[in-house]
Length: 573
Ligand code: ATP
Ligand code: MG
Image (cartoon, rainbow, N blue to C red; front, side):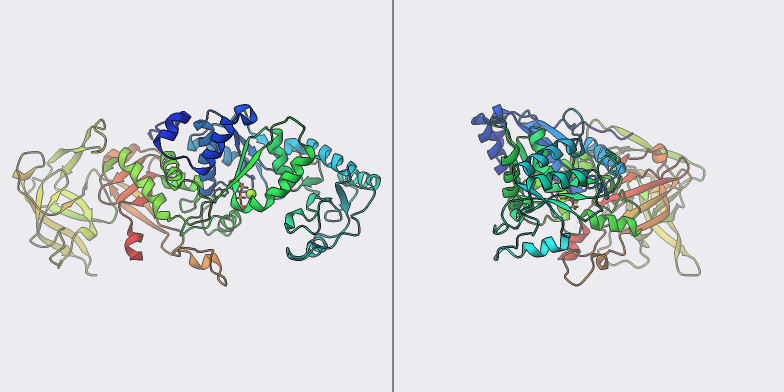
């Protein structure tokens, strides 16, 4: 079974931490706030996903950052679902988000929180704003409203409904809530400044009418708060001290501040927003809309397809929580947008799997090798070390006999000089066993090699002390004992570095046609017979693989996580 080493996280105290490396800009802010006894010295963060899709590697960065900082400073981190748009949200997404966060090894404070739990409070605050003359009901369409907003360099046009009386606004807003009006027929807007150079302050919409069932509040509401109105207020209600968000929200900050100015009670702690650069990965698309498109159009087999950059996809592909957390640590946090090479993510998983996986022999494209001078019917066992990187991993016995399978491309009929594998008259070592010499081979009518004939030198058994050296070592599987398995060779989903970055081309034009190759009759050593879904191995000389949940007792399926070496780096050069 897969051994999930519990990644306890970095529970280092502040002193230790600052000794080890310099603080990033967010840590510096938090530390300063602690020193100044701001918020009574509390540190309380949150991760606020909208449950409208599965989490991806970009979210993983944000999760590692928020939960990681809470651990680092002995604070708390809430999981809050930002569920203000009932049309796109679903409990399936809520459940997957919880599962992914826990799988990464983080525990949220207390219980999951939901912005929808604050609908009553938000409504009350909206009424308060109306009473203070700071919000009004607008009967115009969204199109009219955005047209009147204008452009940053010129003032916008005030709505003809802007100066409605408080009484009229209160009445209309209540009737909006009671369901008297149709979708889109009215909105509630904050009355701020139609000539502000910051477009977000030009009377932003706070509520819209949506006769839609919500996955938690059912049909209780037919008006829903806009994200901008719900977000900062939710942070305030939960007494969040530091609200981390991605850079595109920097320009929203003055609006968030304006809202908080209206509602925060004197003496209360007030959330501080800090922006950081979102993770962009090469060869990947990360917008939930595009990922949903790949799922809905059947281009991938669901959100957890091993080619998806989703956390569930990476998990199924064979990534470990540790490898993702290490990746997040490595990339750190920045204040400017940048693109991270997906090769770094692949490096992180290779690095971790190298430490923890058992080395096994699996032949993906088998061809028979017959040792003509090995006694018929004889079987022996050779001993192989499970994992040279882990001295406690021990060793296992692997059956060896007269008929074996080796990789088809480890043999060449007419090899060039530098080919250190098998060819007529050449010698190689069979991993953990003997040196064999190729004496001949057989082909079928199509010219395909069907059998390779070798002789072995009984004096050369590995570990026997004989020092004769040959250049190549091949992996192999004993034919009689081999088990059949399916292997899914996954590669990057896109063959372009920036699939979504082409002006006149759809990102789907850059799908990698070779992102999945299925091999059906691979031969594996019998040790793998009882491998369980999720278990991970290194296939000697090939790469890292894990057992797919599609496996059944008589049909093993392996996913390639990554090859041993990065073939893309070579291609790029
Ligand atoms: P969309 O793709 O629809 O824009 P989103 O990224 O806004 O989705 P949310 O569910 O709102 O998705 O994100 C939850 C949190 O994850 C937010 O705090 C957001 O800043 C963070 N986040 C999302 N994408 C990234 C990313 N690529 N890098 C870092 N953080 C991210
Ligand atoms: Mg968002």
